[in-house]
Length: 123
Image 1 (cartoon, rainbow, N blue to C red):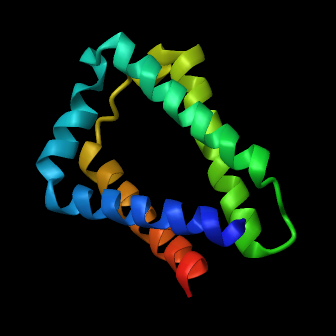
Image 2 (image 1 turned 180 degrees about the vertical axis):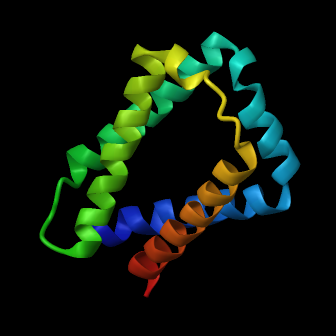
Image 3 (image 1 turned 60 degrees about the horizontal axis):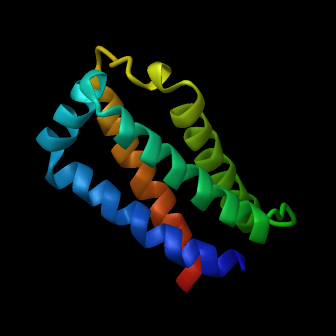
């Protein structure tokens, strides 16, 4: 199950990281404009994160290897993000003053996690 979930999450994270690199201005606008986000879209995003994270955790709450723990942490992070988006959406509307730095760190994080999960899922 570890390889299966990593094989799905990896390409998603890589594509998102590449998107952040290729469409940087779009993602900067998206992050800067979060204060004007549509409340329904925030709630739907929270629901998607929460449900997908719970699917990961219900099918894979394993900590017996580094790979399994990484997939479980991924599920936990998705549930936490979904919970915050649903329960306290106002907390997500605060825009950081350093959008560029945050986006760079996010891009590197998405690419690193995605490549690792692709390695786990396909090699």
